[in-house]
View (tube, rainbow, N blue to C red):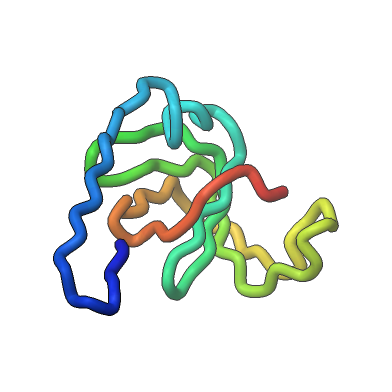
Amino acid sequence: MGFNIRGDSVKICKEVVEVSGEGFEALLGQTVTLFGAVYIYTGQLVGVNDTCVKLKNPKIVYETGPFNEKNWKDAQSLPNELYVQRGLIEAFGIVK
């Protein structure tokens, strides 16, 4: 957003275009990392809907270690598949 010193109202218009096959959809079947405000989760992305994503073989990452290394320094396996609310995810992608 922008503003100016004179206090004049400035309107900024942006067109939002939804692209099929991008974002989570593009990563289905791959090992992804989900960064939230508190926790980091990793696992195979096997499901996506409007409210959550589903991870198979999920782990919670307690300590990342260097990001250029192949494995997490401390990632604990969770016993079952995990659903994570999309609204709690700040960033995601293939990290390791």
